[in-house]
Image 1 (cartoon, one colour):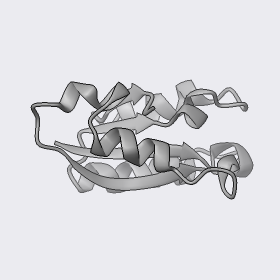
Image 2 (cartoon, one colour; image 1 turned 120 degrees about the vertical axis):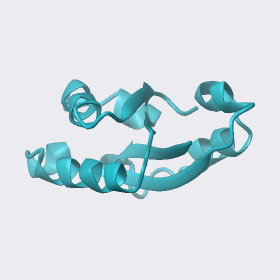
Image 3 (tube, rainbow, N blue to C red; image 1 turned 180 degrees about the horizontal axis):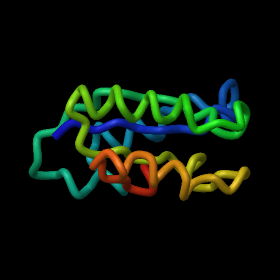
Image 4 (cartoon, rainbow, N blue to C red; image 1 turned 90 degrees about the horizontal axis):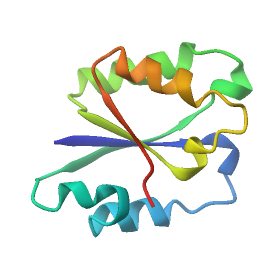
Length: 106
């Protein structure tokens, strides 16, 4: 199963993303559902839907992930707590391309 992690661009310079990688590598917290499933982390991307005030870039990312066979996108805690209140829009974009969205990493 191919997995991608989406994070909020506003954490750039504040977050190391180690929490996301640690829980993925150890199959803990929101990744515990994969304990007996072979997975591949194929992408870590940042969403810029609020700064660009456009869905265009996130649609492009979703298309690329779909073309690469990504099955699920995990939204990091930063993206789940989207201060621009656009989390549902982000989820809809991925789900419209048959990519399952899981809210959370660590």
